[in-house]
Amino acid sequence: MKRLASLFTLVLILSSVATQLAEADWYDKGVPLTNGQNPVIALTGTFAFTSPNGGVHCNAGVMELELIGGTTDGHISTINAEEADKCEIVGPLALLCKGTTTIQSFNLTSTPTLINNGGANIRITNVDLDVECTGLTVTLISMAGQPMVATPDNTTGIGKLTLSGRLQAKFGEFPGESEVTMAGTQSVLGGKAGTYGLVS
Image 1 (cartoon, rainbow, N blue to C red):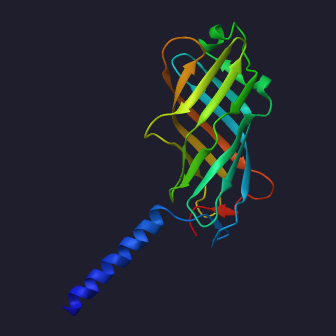
Image 2: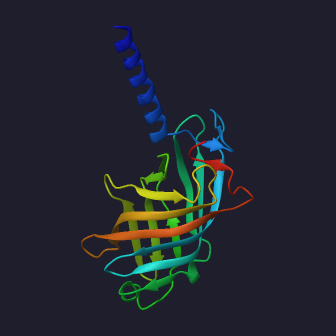
Image 3: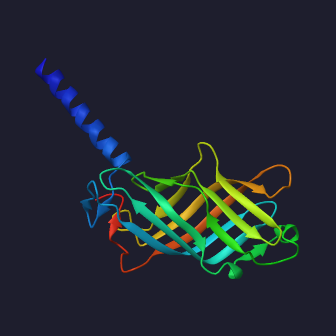
């Protein structure tokens, strides 16, 4: 009976460890963030989306993540293109934008866009982005059950995040929707590279 109790205790311990690894707290230099500690991570880099209808490539995008201490959650407060006129329209989308080859804006419209610490990556849900060009707004939203993913270069101290995933796109008043592939690489700013992590 004692042996059975010991085995049961071991199973509970292993289950607890597995759960913690699957959904870890946020960390500041290896120390868990606590309630009330909600740091904002500012990043800059590239954004791009591609689809059969064309896409947009931005080389100067900005993103801000707010981590909620004592939880595995957070949100994205900012996604935008610092210099929208340098974002290139590629493929057939240029025709829908009345022949222009640059956009007017690339902004996050949803509140909040949610993030969750998955241990190995950050899951992003509730995305709602508007990309505006001449005569057209392309709306990009999260697909049910398919979060975008931000994969860090180092899970114990983020220096860069690589974005990947699929979103649903609506091209202005044109009928129908299509899937787009979202990608990009964002680097941490403000001397905070390597500070915040997903695991200790």
